[in-house]
Image (cartoon, rainbow, N blue to C red; front, side, top):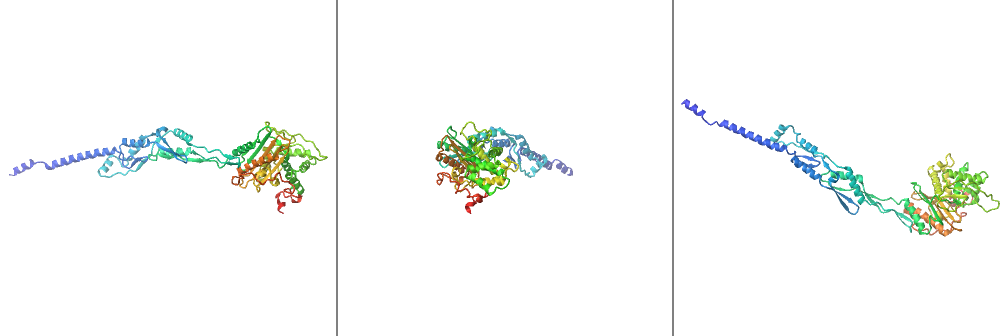
Length: 541
């Protein structure tokens, strides 16, 4: 009975062993399944990884590369706005040789998934349901031909840029106006914007940076052309055989100038009395006495020939020809190579000592002949330059003080020269082309065939300028009613150019028929009334 029981136990079904085997088999199968699943998961890029802003998490390598290459193959749209409408310009990346280096970006993306440890550590995390948090954006690795982009942008600029219009002017108002504004592509900023768009997966539209271009004001060239066209409109041939005009204008703020036949020689007439006064100041050892100051005023303001001859005689120590040479030597030392005086002014009185000294060599424009006085010559350029030198001396202690070094002329003396010249109130010529209350320091002169005026106009806005105008007409008797208004209108054109906010839009109607007489109007009544620092003070006392 005991033996039968043992035999039955040994012959029974091994349930536990079979169950264990089944469990082991199931576990092995599950492990294989999970390993397969994990291996498939490992072939995908980790969640949270992006390349240049493009999400590639969960994609296969092939799909990831295809996604970013497709995004960066899209054209960029560049908008050129001309102020009226946008002009869309399509730029395909391959036009600039766009190339993406996918290999290093893919390697960096794959490496991001290995940050959680080795294979089995990552597998264990996978089994335990632990997701490795990855947040990484891989930088774009791409390149293109910058010179190709430069060429495309330059072509866009050529097609769409609009240069500012040229200045225009009105012969009725004698006003020069700024031309229409233009616009231009900012090539440097446009290149940076296009580069950003090429490297962006979604910001593929570029508003091209456009700079508005326009002149702050018309250039002096506009005034140059206005003067010539005005003379033509009046039938005065500025470069003719029977008529010649010479105009010199200098902006005293910038030094810019216009020169219309400024090197043509003209008779100096009474304009040469400015260098005579300059030489008198240089000659005097101290502040002028009342009599010396009155002699200067009579010479400059009334163009009194006797006073001018007396000054040159005093400078020459009693020898007027030595004084004449001294005047010429000084102005030539200052750089005025086409200006001289070689004889006294003719007085037409009995006993006057006549004669002349040798005239210096000059080199004016040989193409034009105004038949100038062989004893007294100058040019618009020379007289304009002299006023500029005196202005710099008076305002900045430079200019003439440098041209005549060694203390030959002082800043105070330059100021007094211009102060005397500012009392030249004949109310015609250059003065007739500016407002009646505007300050001008000038010297004029005329003979039968020539009229000229040169000086400094002090603009209320600070844009002071030098202007010198000479006109010549082959004639036996000057037509004042023809030539003087021409100078006045040239002066008005210059005033309007430098003072557009206070322009004279039409010729002044209150001008006297001829120049005001000096005595009784603007010459101080006697030596005791001449104040070289305030020349018109006698009128207020």
